[in-house]
Amino acid sequence: MSACPIYPDMVAIMLLQIPDVLSKAQVAQVRQVIDAAPWADGNETSGYQSALAKRNLQLPEGSPAAREVGDLIQDALGNHALFFSAALPLKVYPPLFNRYEGGHTFASHVDNAIRYLRGTSFRIRSDLSATLFLTEPEEYDGGELVIEDTYGQQRVKLPAGHMVLYPATSIHHVTPVTRGARVSSFFWIQRHGARRRPARDAVRT
Image 1 (cartoon, rainbow, N blue to C red):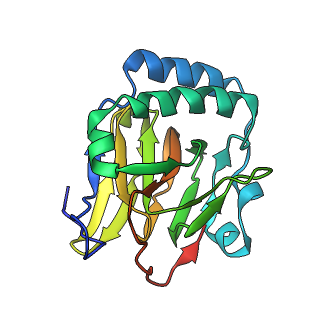
Image 2: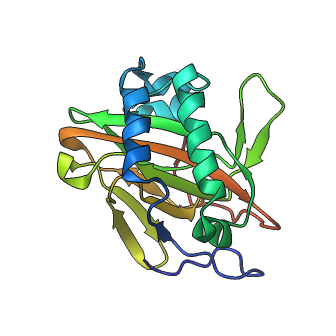
Image 3: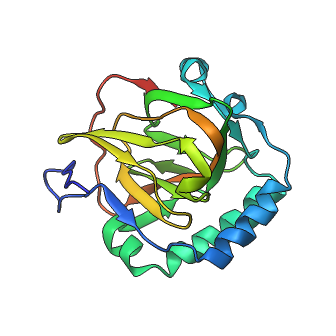
């Protein structure tokens, strides 16, 4: 993937693929839990502008299933040396989960600069965004994560258990899923010592 410096006073952050965050057995465990859980319209957590761009399903934030597998993912991140060396995480937002099928898509947008965990005092500055794939690429058509950076568009579709890490100020979108279903986890990271760069104009989620 391309280098993408976003903090001129720090070591350059790369748009980076991180392999094997979850093993195949862990992916299967996550999918068993979340596939059996009730999903909701992804726009239940969206603002007005985002609702115009977003068409997907989402596991309700804070649901028992989301908490159970979110803890598993956070434990896996804590044991992954490449994630730690690349992200320098100060805080990690509890993982969320989405599902795209039947033409679902998410138009170009930029993630919110600050994220609040409902019902708590927890908040995070979103320096980095992460997408952890939970479906094998051959199981669905479309569903590419397209990230715009200084080198153009980067199209990402990774094996289940692999993750992509990229600047949260990047404009990005998900192409329509025309066959099968794309299931993934997504979350944000606040880095040690980072300053978030102003984003270009785009719909904010």
